[in-house]
Length: 95
Image 1 (cartoon, rainbow, N blue to C red):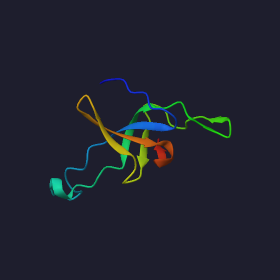
Image 2: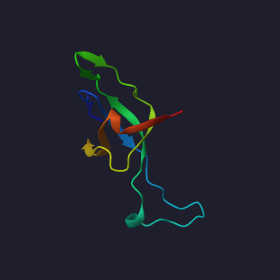
Image 3: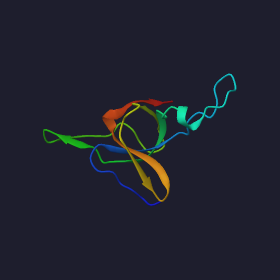
Image 4: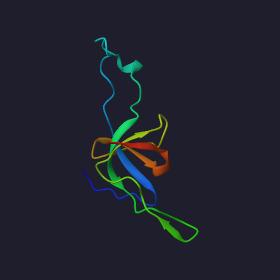
């Protein structure tokens, strides 16, 4: 994969695959699959400045995060589907 370095408080996330079947074992057709809201951080920007003070990033590469259903923008790098979003679009880090 090509190396991407986000600027400011932006984060690049690789979304987890959408669920293929329900908990009862029924397969979900492509048209009914929910957009994933969980993924792994693959790149993090340096942070942002507010009133001359640098605010460091909370997330780091490798973190598994939850984000909003309509958060960020979908991008494609070297055939890989990724999401570019602001750190504020991320709800939390899964431990």
